[in-house]
Image (cartoon, rainbow, N blue to C red; front, side, top):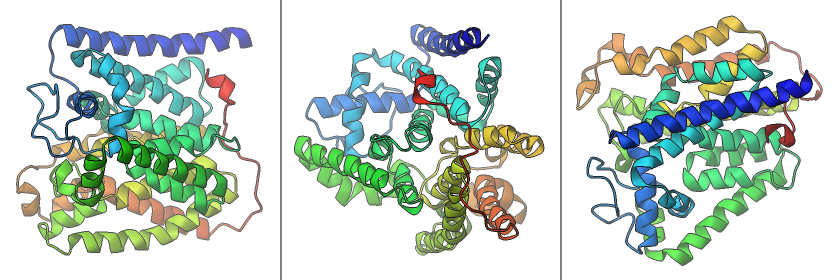
Length: 396
């Protein structure tokens, strides 16, 4: 029976991945214009390979005519996206959605006790969550980075490779840098140093390969949140986005958002240390993840894919009501039904504040509520990790 189950699970996941890739192929052959962000990844890598300027060029090399987006990622991302160049332009999206579905299954497998048909069913069900389907629709890399970070923090913990994948993820998108802090806060100093070393090493490589662009990014582009889109747009579900909407992009908005984030960081860091000390490793990681989404200047709604391991953790612990509520919340597309665009956000009345900032409000209340709950619990000695963590070989 065990052997049969061990064969069924990869077969089911493989079928889902192949199905996702088949969808990508069909859309490619049908000339559907999907996966704008995946097109930018590939074009950024091509621009780098051609020796052109990635951050100042008017248009990236080989960027499809229907896409008009800049390359907003760190210089190392251009290097790490080079393998996408080997894929036909229109098929990049198909490759990324297949990788996203595989990543989704890996995250669910690592985060909970679900196996076999349950794993496959949850993987399909997770596609209904707004952050998940939007990530796939845009051809974003969020789910891949989610899997990379979860594998590093939960599966590779205690090995000489732990921290490396976090450093790579941070080199692609800066927001995973908060997990470097997580490693230090939880006492995993060697892992944290490996993450820092990996991240710094990739930056040094890029200063050697594209010095002009590396200087431009780290001296200018990285400090411009508007480069990635309107900071006050509803889909920026971060503290900065919320304050910008309320203040109509007043000059003091970023400072106030940073101050609120610093206040929230106090209970969050305490929670992370307490949960990790008690052996609830995934719960500690989730607190860090949601704090990171809050304090990042830009957290698009599709960045909130951390809802997936949260739901799986709640379900694994038998908290089905909470798992259901979180699922309904992220599947409701609440931030998509609120009037938005242009200066519409500036005219919201009080009745639209909560739905218009739903992810921000929910995460902030979640951190504070969990902190209050923890205050009522007695301190306990470290326990063996309750979280069902498969061995690396189980994921092959």
